[in-house]
Length: 198
Ligand SMILES: [Zn+2]
Image (cartoon, rainbow, N blue to C red):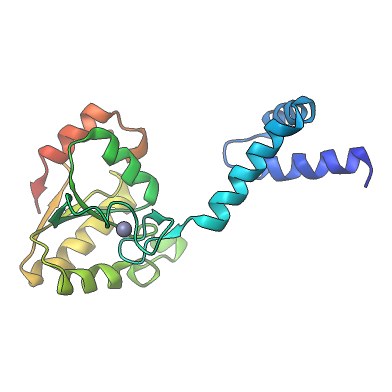
């Protein structure tokens, strides 16, 4: 393969990454071309390792390297609380606040009629199964404070309430329309502590 062709393949792959436009792709590609082989290999190893070793936790759908994730396997976590989030990255945002010590459940998205995503496309059935088999007292719904997140929260509240389990939502104060992952730790921590029953 010609040098031009291999460079073009790298540019195409980098350009597919979120947030990487053609200019950034070019900057990264030339950086890697000039970087020593060891540095480039560390990057390719890191990518291969997450793809080979990281999968979804069988219980909460967080990222895991074993059958269950490190949070599900930690006996010091409060087993009576489940915090429901859209994506695994939301767990990192909540963990960073240090304000929450319960379990999680990742939906794998949010309800979005426009994208044809309903409860059946999410891990809702698995959540309800957990509520039936685990000793859960409260479900905290921490979907993003936007239209889809709110729709998902009210759907879950309606579905869970008949089970006589308390359902709460993060307190207001989070930037409306924003993502949990971009909220600052203090604001997000406060929103968890001041959660309100719905
Ligand atoms: Zn888990």
